Structure formats: C-alpha cells, structure tokens
Length: 215
Image (cartoon, one colour):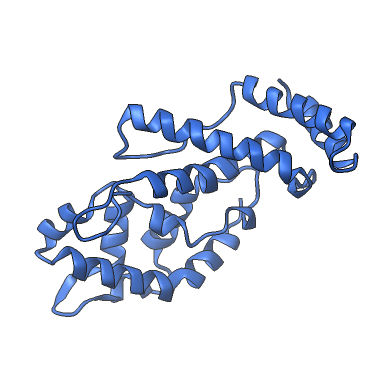
C-alpha cells in the first residue's frame, strides 16, 4: 500500500463528520491498508522473550488501531506520511505502554523493563514523524554527549562511578537492576531511588535536547 493512498484515506476520514458512514468507510480502508502495508515497525525490546514480544506487539497494534479510529484528526498531513505517524505512535507510545504494564516486577518492585522508564519522560507526539531516529537513540545521544556535563557529574554519594550517565546507559543497553547492582556493589533500592530522582531532575533537559535536534 503506497503512502499517497493511505494519505487520501486519512484525509477522507478527517473531512467527514464523526460517526458518519463516509468516515467509517475511510477509517476501515485506512486501517486495513496500514495492516497490509508490510511496513509496521517492530520496536526494539531487549530482554523480552520472542513469544511475549509477539503478544505485546499484537496488543499494542490493537490499541493503536483503536486510537487511530478515535483520533484520526490528530494526524497532521503536513508533518509526514501516515506510516511515519503510525510507527512513531507504535514505537514511542503503545508498545511501551503494553510492555510497561505487562512486565513482571522484581522483589524490590522495580520493573524488569530495560528502558521504558527513561523513555516515558518524552511525549511521542512532540517529535516529528519523518526522518527521526528511534526515541531510544535520541535519548542515548543526549546522555552520551552530556553537553552540559550534568549526567556525568551526578552520582550516588560515596560511589563516584555510579553516575546517572553510567546507570542510564546501562539501562539503555538492556541491563537489569540486579545486574547493575552487582556490578557497582550498590543495593537495587538505592540505585532505583537515585535513578528516579535524576529522571525528575533531568527530564526537561532531555526533552529540550530531543526537540532541538535537527533531522
């Protein structure tokens, strides 16, 4: 299914009143076209078993299609193609939401998710649809570059190696809390508390960096 046909169906849905037959027909064709396009993304998900990954992605797609039917007016035809919009929402919102709610938790109550907590500080619809790296790549770039020296200077008291930069990059690489705990010799609860405080402190800085990236 080519981009122009999907765009025409999306516009047809937007141009017809809610609950009208014409809008329903356009949305049905749009969803079918997206599903049959063969271009729906497979979000990165280190640490998720293949069987679970398929289930999570299937549920995320169901939620995404419901969202599209209920919120087609939020598609901005001037920002990019329908498939770019769809894959942005799938990768940056709906798959992460499913994974975040489905993941089991450790005894300490921290999710086994590898980077969902870090990704959740960014609004997927604030970022352009087209020519954009995965959100995880944008966040990694921000933390690795550390242009203002914030992430590398913030560390757990008495553990200068345990910087926010180091811990965040470990999380993005798929390490679980227990693995980082054993590596640094710091309790999981201490790591988690520090990490969450840093996320609150640095969230606006990270979001501003991503919004200002030139693609």
